[in-house]
Structures are given as C-alpha cells and as structure tokens.
Image (cartoon, rainbow, N blue to C red; front, side, top):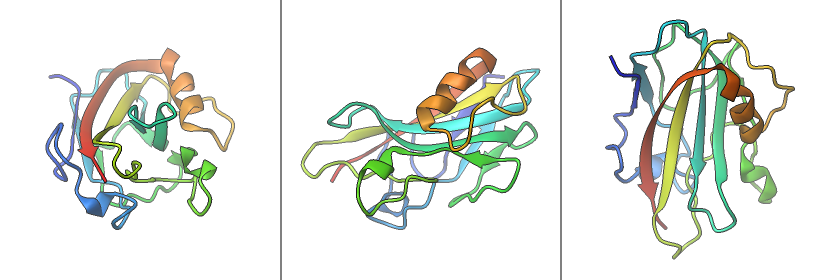
Length: 157
C-alpha cells in the first residue's frame, strides 16, 4: 500500500473552497492518510505556497502527531502531544503566526498552489525548540523521514 494523503474538501490539484482560506472561515481542511510505512512513530504536516511573490510562504506546521492517527478533522485544534509551528503570517500586521493560516495570495497574482505535505517519521517527537518555524520543523524532520505524501490545491484572488 502506498503512503497517501487525501482531503474531501477539494480534489487533488483542484480549487480550495473559500471556507478554508483567510477570506473565508480560515479553517484547516479535513485530511486523512493511509499506507504509513512500518516503523512510523509520528507524523508532521506542513502546508506551503511556492508561488508567493517573495519565495515560498509557509501556511501551517503541525508535528508530533501520534502514529496511531490517520487524519485531522476540519478546523483541527491540537492537544498534547501534538504541537503547532509558526507560520509566515507573523510578518503581516494583523495576522496570527500560530496555527493554520489559509490561502491569501495577492489579488491579481494568478493561481497559487498550496501543498499539504505529510511526513511519516521514525521518531515520536521532533528535536526542535518551541516555538519552531515551519522551516525548522521541516529541517528537523529530514533525518527521521520514512516517507512523504502530499495533496495540492489551488486558490486565486
């Protein structure tokens, strides 16, 4: 079985509904996964936009997700041991840099791609100092990554 990540909120490569954006309710979409490799002890999830005008913009990081989980419900709010990373919205006045920050590309910039990437990890807890940024979490996950799965959606303003 192949490690895969899915959502019923939008089709793979399709448009992300406004509900899951900063223009809407800013809820994280529901996500499910299957086919995790043998030896997985936790998961980490990072959502990023590689089409941002000033380089990759990080929208969400959630990590130390226990191995027995097979998904995150819509609008997921973590409880220990699950931790949230810092997104890139902290650089924009009036926006929170903690938790999920939905799509909000510049108006007229064309469609942006949002990659939700799930890492199956061989460690129960990532060795990062809190609060960790999305990039710090991704870097810490590298040596422990057994497999990755992703789903991508698009959004345009």
